[in-house]
Length: 336
Image (cartoon, rainbow, N blue to C red):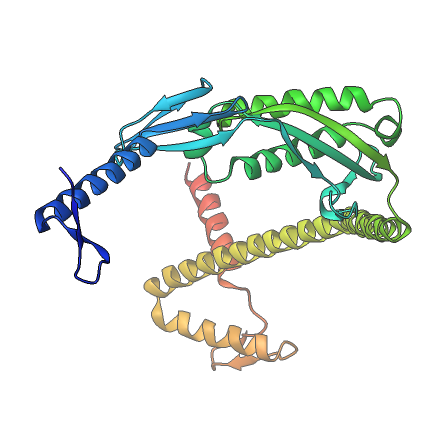
């Protein structure tokens, strides 16, 4: 059925008019349906090339697609992310674009404490597209950090001659093995293909001067430490001996004061015993003894009318006590 009718006017001009409004809507619907089908067909397939792999995500669940060719997916539900699996690389120690040295990466210290400028080139590829996308935010940056750490560790275990001449192959092999072990632990979805030493040479004059300053500072530090230890070893015995002498003097003074206090206690007890026996006489004797201590050369004689008695100097209470004990002992022997 024709959508449009042809009709001639009175002037003989042929004009085209729509057959009906319904036919117009019908035509529009067909066109829209065709466009939707074409769009769905384009969203239902994807192509994987030889050097590519893909990650097919369905409601957040990722699946690797590794076979090249034409593949199908559910439109608007499944998403596809393609990953390039060709071998790529990056430099360590120099800028690939300008070939200028990057000192923070290139300058290293060998086992014999020499600075050396070493450049490396690292080759890698994606081994697992799912892990390469979802296991970390930037697996290549992590690989570079691992490579730099392993390089410095290995270079630091070789002397400068080995790094510059005969030990390059061994160094490369050791670094490669160490990096591969680290990648297995991290499981980033990228694999190391190879790592090579591009160049190795002594550093510039400026760096050597800086190194010499550092070494001089280290030697100065060691000298200061040795001098301090020497001074300590010299002074420590003297100080220890002085401390021992002070302690011994203090102990002797302590013993002296204890003995003195003990003697004073014994004297007081003796005086108190005499005082209990005869308080008046004891008080007089204490007075006379005090006078004798104040005036040691004084001689005091008292005439009581019944005879002359020599009062000062007189014997102490302890002497009297000894004499009294001796007299008692003699009297006892006599009685026996």
